[in-house]
Structure formats: C-alpha cells, structure tokens
Image (tube, rainbow over all chains, first blue to last red; front, side, top):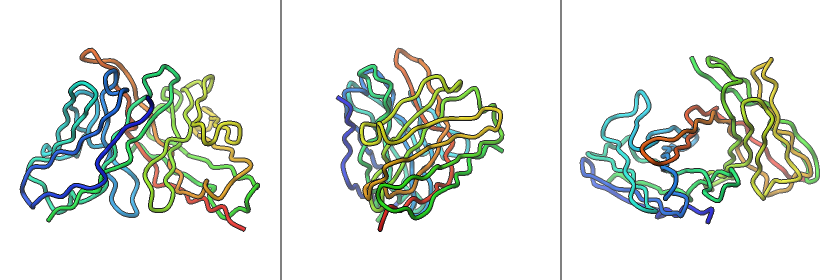
Length: 109
Length: 125
C-alpha cells in the first residue's frame, strides 16, 4: 500500500500532551518523518528517523513507532504549536515513490 | 546558510506549459536527491517527483507521469520541473525540497530536511 492515514483534526489544551498518529504499511519498513506547516508558510521538518529533531526544534516534540503506526507527541503543547502536521515516508513497494499523510490540523485550546 | 529558492510560477491556460526552477545554495547540491512537492489550495501535501543526485534516476507520481519532467544542472546548483499539458488540478504551490535517506536501527528512513518557500502555479482560462 502507498497510503498514510492521519486523523484530520486533533485538539489539545494549552500545556497538555497530544499524540498525532500516522498509519500505513510502509511504516513497517520506514520511519515516518513529520512536518509542521503554519498558514501561508512552507513545511518545516520537526522529527525524522527513530526520534531525531533538527536543530531549532523544541524538545517537547518527539516521535515513536510501532508496527505500521508512527506517532508524533507534543509534551506541553504551546499556542505556537497550532498548525497542520504531515507524516511522510517512502513507499515500501520498492518503486521509490514518496507518500504523505493527509495531514492533521492541531488546535491548541 | 542552506537555502532553496523556487521561481517560474504563474498563470497558464489549460494545456499550456511552464518550467519551474529551484536555486540551491549552502550545500553540495550534487550529493543529494531532490524532490518537488505541491499543495493545492486548501489541500494537503502531494509529492510530485524526485531525482537522484547525479540526475540519472527520476521518479514521478502517477498524477503527473508523462506530463512533467524533472531535471537538474549540478553545475548551476539548480533543479527544474518542466510541466506540460497542464490541467486545472495542477493548480498549487510547488515546493522544492532536499532529500535525505538511509538505514538505522533496523529501519529505513527518508525525509526532506530543507524546503523552499514555494512558487504558485495557476492553471486557468
């Protein structure tokens, strides 16, 4: 399968913890990468590999995976974390294609 | 500073053509595969195409195969996307991105660590 499935919307109270999930067969072979996108801006990589953060990404962002499911966790969500989040990986069928999840709109209440 | 800057977007009629460019700086361009990703208005991210560092291997989403051609000029540190037979559904912001891939902890990994700000393509009569 070349699909990655995300919940369309998730909400979290300010300062609480939220988990955003991504499911797909390719995640049995590939770690998901995660991108944050705010309105009118380009996506920004926030998590890659097993659980790595690029320079400048706060340590409240973390990643994990189990079986065909990857998760992005924000521990102590801040108002500035309100954004769309996309997961991404390679298609595992061997055709070298790339897939994105449909995106999750995170609202911080 | 690592940077990607797209250009070439604009308004084009259905059936028309457009060539996008992505100028790279701050890294060894020829060492990395590159991708084009697009985002239609109000929609999610859609991977369009990728090319290996040497330019010898190219890959396309089914939605653009046969109409779009990705290429690169490593002497100019520039990535291109030639778009032909454009359709209304190709209307989107087009981003170029730098690819990284590898294998660690018993799994493969793939990600796009640098993105441009995007260029807008509108296909309309």
